[in-house]
Image (tube, rainbow, N blue to C red; front, side, top):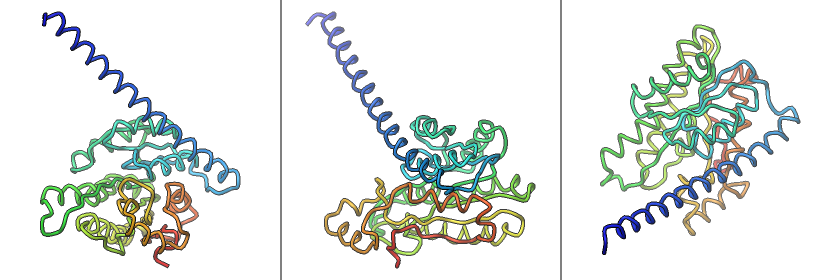
Length: 294
């Protein structure tokens, strides 16, 4: 085959690959837009009913902001009036945050240095330091405990636990100096109930419960309320149980409301914790589980 023919074939394959990637990105954008419109429509209805306390004048930061649950929380904070930024390791955060009326920031929260850099970018984007922090970033890793890779264990704890502490530490100086702040840590049902082959995830979320209580004990008397939300079994990719025909059916049967949770179910509790409506509530991890623990 002539060299020009090879070049033509290469160009053709390159063009097809580019078209596929463009189509994929368009699908992702459409997916995020449709999800946001559903969230927005529901939030608008609740807002008209006086569902929210205003967060106008507050600056809010959500970690893991491109996640399915976090997207609803970002939209809720923004619609309640807070200037809101969302941090995620995925570039999709630019799209999801923009649709919600927030600012998207990419960052790696797996180390103290990464948290510091991401927080600096957030303060710059928001025009000042953060009044409300929502620690929502999270990852999972499923292995039997006897063969759990050490690097996976450490990775889960770095993201799911250590980043919560580092980010809380970073926002604390400003919050303490002004005598007002809100930190909301996103836990899990695994704060209370273990699931098989998820030792790192369960351990990290159990520790988030105690971190929430510990920070509340140290900071609440100085103006920072620290609370948490423990989502039940939610309709997200991290919920592998829902795809299991046996275990999924058994779990769903135990949920009193008979359905998987969504991000919208978290918005009301979140805005309560972030507003002055929760002035005398601190150190609480609130299960939002559809009655799973009932």
